[in-house]
Image (cartoon, rainbow, N blue to C red; front, side, top):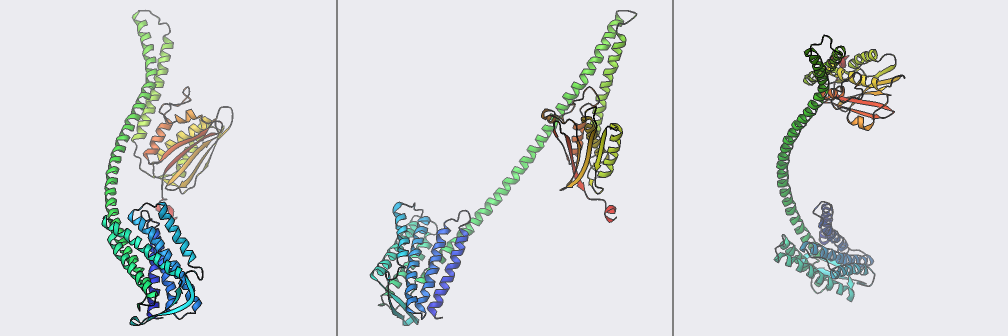
Length: 491
């Protein structure tokens, strides 16, 4: 391969690489203009490849065919430059601009037709000073007109970069100087084609000059963007830190407010529960006091008044004991380790005694599950859930309660399911409210679920209910999972 062919091949390779990089950059946000520049680079590569036919000893038909494709590539190249320069200079596309660009595309197709831009005659053009010999297809008058049009189109593009340079557009000077060199190279090739000037063809090399210049501006632009992004990232990190601290303070204040609100609701409910029996006791004592002051030997209704007072005291004592249990559970240390299988079996055994033969209680608990909670706390919660499940089965029919456990990601899930009446939505929404109960006339003060949720959440877990009227209720308990003890693993 001779020197001109080597230069043409090298120029084609550089242009292909530049086009591929521009195409890839155009996919990034803010770099869409590189999509147009990739067309500039790819068309320059096509021109350089076609130029190889003029420097190698190839048959005349191949030379003429390559010449047609080369001119078509040159037309596409300047068509791409027209689009890129308009984007660079901020020129809004008008109808006349769009018509001109469409005309260039049509011209690129026309010059590929045999006999339109070139004859079938091949002439030799030598550049002795450079040791180069070119074999060119002889252009037709239409082909010479196309060369003149390309020169005019390149001057228009050059003028756009010059105007942008004068108006202070960044990097416009580099574009204008490098594209001016391209115009001079094109003028040299146009004169060399006539055979009157023994100069080598330079346009394939000239295409690389503005491409390299544009890529220099791209590196500067990329570095500037990187600096801006680094500054924005640092600022964003500061803002995130500040917002995180503010959010933590707001969450702490909200948590404190929620605790105060919960305490207020609990105190209101407790006061309501204590007020009724206290008022009953007070009324009966006043009744006895009034009778004694009257000096009557016999106090009418004394037995009933004492019975009512004792019953009220019983209710009052039950509430106080429930409150004491709640306080004890809330004050308990949440730390510890519990073997799920052992705690469940003990809780189920006690529940079977309380429920009797009418309720079947089934369990399916793997032996290798351990949770981060105190065993007595887990037993307290399971006892409440099993008692509620048994109470949910209506009197007069047999029922079934199932207890299952499984490992989840970072947690152990224990479910207690019953086939009882289920709960309507309005009851399900209030199930965890302190002192809320649907069995007020029997046992239970409505604190079991409220206390159980507090115990579970204090251990880092969660407790919720799933229920549908007529289909039973499912209590779901999740607690943080712990690995089995070392001795259990080795065994």
